[in-house]
Length: 104
Image (cartoon, rainbow, N blue to C red; front, side, top):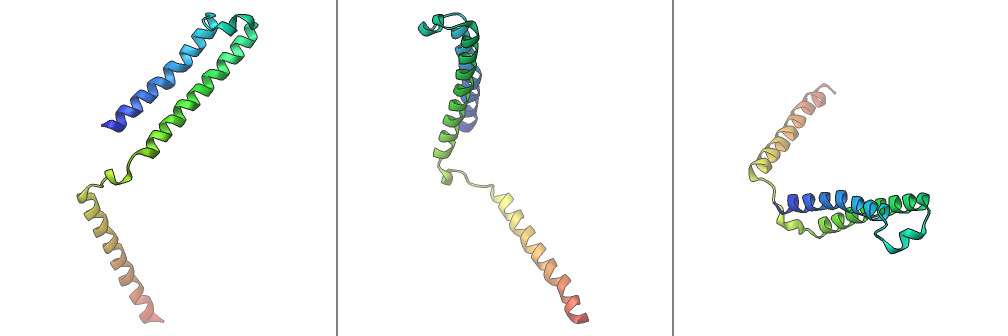
């Protein structure tokens, strides 16, 4: 459940932060933005919005890498079925190779 919560919060930031940056630049809420031409304001605000999304993605990756690996345990039923499937396929391979040896 915690992973879903982290994903939801990060997705929200990936949407909200770029919009806030664009809004702040286009409405002259930042002190340095009033001295720029409209073309420069658009260029700088777009660049910062893209950079902010990449920063949020990098932060999400950092959080994912810090997740403890031993906390996640596979389903025991799935493991049993997988082991049985592997044992069955190796048994079938040995049976199918025996007639070839007899013919040679």
